[in-house]
Image: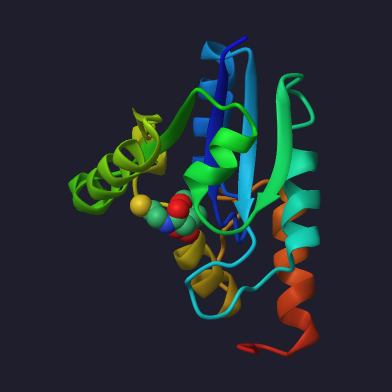
Length: 165
Ligand code: PNS
């Protein structure tokens, strides 16, 4: 049984992530979507539980997906879960340097390989951080995230008023 791990912050999940998760699910028996508990990035917009709920909702059509949290080293979690490979999306050359470095470090630490999937071109510009920024200031992100995420973004920013935290 081949298991792939798709790690990330998913703050929030976008159509770009879903594209990678769906394509990974076609190639592996099981896909674990691994949501990091302790992101390096300063402040999260959504709680872990909210991110998990959104991921459940947007992957409900796939029957070989598990959503899990992890903290610490990704490779320790991958080993714990018996994952065979890590799968990452590559949007552009700008992603490549850091992703290559992480893939090589992870391989060195654990022997676990990283497979890169080129992001579908229509999502090449898409990132959670840009979605957060555009949504924060009232921009239209309806083509970038599913409806459930859109609604949560609207709620989240309504809590703090326009341009809030
Ligand atoms: O969605 P993101 O924020 O780009 O995801 C980054 C993530 C979570 C995949 C990466 O930061 C990660 O793997 N963190 C876990 C800590 C770790 O293992 N660091 C060493 C990497 S070589």
